[in-house]
Image 1 (tube, one colour):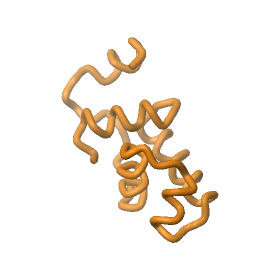
Image 2 (cartoon, one colour):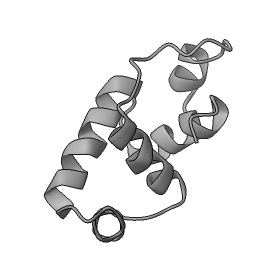
Image 3 (cartoon, helix red, strand yellow):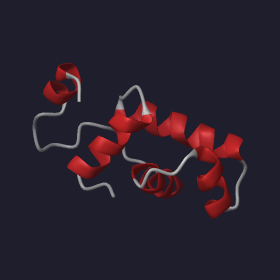
Image 4 (cartoon, one colour):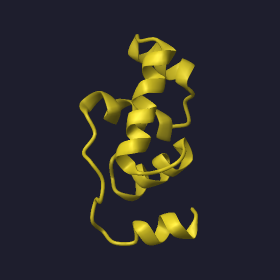
Length: 79
């Protein structure tokens, strides 16, 4: 994790906007290592819908990529 990210989230607080139930589902699957196509199949939605959810997750968590989102999810018990 980058030093900026780790210092930004070094406390035990959850400094981000809460995720919707669907975003929570998508984040769990992202943290398990699934790609958008796999997530779409599991949730019976289009890959574009998954892409939209992932973008929302990244914005709400204030991170730049899926890996950072997965790290935060594990660190803060979101998954």
